[in-house]
Amino acid sequence: MYKGGKNTVKRFAICLAVVMAVMSFTGCGRLEYSMPYSTDLAVSAYNVVTKQYTERLEPFATDLCVVTENITNDANVDMSQATAAILFDLNEREVMYAKNAHERLHPASLTKVMTALIAIKNAPLDKVLTATDAVTITESGAQLCGLKSGDTMTLDQALHILLMYSANDVAMLIAENIGGTTEHFMEMMNEEAKRLGATNTNFCNPHGLTQDGHYTTAYDLYLIFNEAVKYDSFNEIIHMTSYQTVYYDRNGNPKELEFETSNLFLRGHYQSPDNVTVIGGKTGTTNAAGHCLMLLSKDTNGSPYVSVILCSEARDILYTEMTDLLDEINN
Image 1 (cartoon, helix red, strand yellow):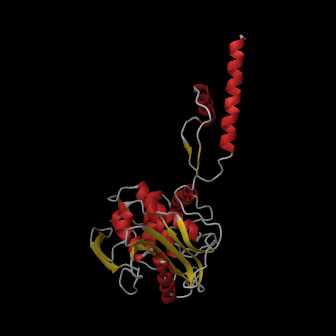
Image 2: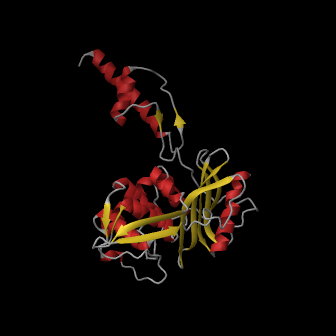
């Protein structure tokens, strides 16, 4: 090999070592860096390592709130009757309150946010869904809209009933029609959870009724909700106070359905703090999960916040706790 060739290889090796050293120190924070030199060879070495040359290394959680410990210093927030709770400022990516954010708990019908997210991402809203015997749920106290095998409705109708009325039979309708089978839909839900970084989550059903191995955390629910609110159809539904529709039985006969949202802030039964507007969210209740609530709210400037409370003792306590939590936005 001629002398110039040896020098070129040597320079390439040095540049490659420097670039990899820079990469090894970037960690998980948002670190900007600039090349201490600017040669074509340096850029080429970087391309060999990463396949793509960019000016900034972006970590996974750059645009997310991150919780590493409890943040419960404010004595005005009494969360003694709830197992877990969080309040996040989405614009500032600030953790305003956090209690047991990573504790695995039963989520009850907050599960349905992921069910809706998978459906919205994988099918058009005008897709017609047909019920099978899978919609037959016999668990005592389970919320149902009364679906029978052969009934049909659009995905748009089903999502309204799922998120506002929290019907468990509609969750099964969505799972079978979007996933092909309920089992495959569960795989889709759990794959999406992993993609979003919700690593303390495992879904065993699409509705949230109590089942061994079905769990998530307040933080993981934030990750899922944060993704769902990117879709206009989801935001529109969770903001509605009432809904009426007509779907059809196997013989084409109409079946009317009318209901109000299960969110008592939207129905006016409870008032949010001054300067805070509840946009919408999801409720959930089972014996194992207790009383659960997840909300999207905004302040007077329109800045968004996500709040989650899991496993509260009673419904009135849950809404009192959530009101106290939302009042942190004003502090």
